[in-house]
Image (cartoon, rainbow, N blue to C red; front, top):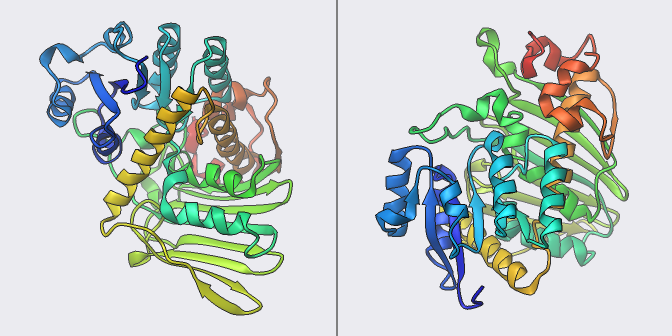
Length: 387
């Protein structure tokens, strides 16, 4: 591969490409999209216009992209139920892979993909772009610097997640189906991987309530509310997640102080710009300026650009990216452990056993466990529990 230019093949051209990958792939001078595949003609045409591709560079069959010698990296943005075959095919063809989140439907599949990448010494990253949002970059810096002492309790308020539909040309409601692998918690798994990153170590235990209260008599297949508590070796995190107009932001309590971050229009991470970030120590407040742009989607677009720049450097330097697939597998296990806890009413220890039905089958494995009589998830009949 010529170090001057990283040549990219895109598989899947949904909405995330519009506001995320497109800004990155059209702004980094040494990263260039050379081929695109999508199952819908309309999305192929949209992508062709976005990236200025010739007719010979767009395909209905993703395998045509994998066969090209001028593709160094494949970025996979199709819904997660279709990713396994594509990612395995990319590794077999000797391509590095950047995959959308979550990395897979099940930890078993995630492990299989990681093993395949390792066998070929290929770089395998996941789009955990919130690592590169300026507010989280600054929070990480402040925590690592000991600004509030040792981090003890972290609360991630994600109760104002906007329920954006999928691409009209594909399936607008695909995130609300069982094929998505879960509901709002899986959709916004960003909070889960960020919590591990901020604590600097993997989760050990998970306890959760999971429900779909806003659907009422209409019913739901997946959750739209998840209240999750996570134990780490050095502290605890609470992730409060919901589609709606609830509280957004971050609170952190340390051994010597506290940290708070909130968004413009009282929104949630990823949907607007941070309005304030401050720490309190000895009951004195210190405000910390944030480097952000005037438009929220520009902020998200820039996070993708920084993620792509890191992934480019990881490929060149033969090192793991900031967002490696192994971390994505751990985040997936936390989300699934939350579902398991919500269904069984029990604390779940991590990592999950490789023989556990949830490890092997994801949310479909929840049908094989004993449902707690008072489970809100059971009452709501989500995850196929009503069948």
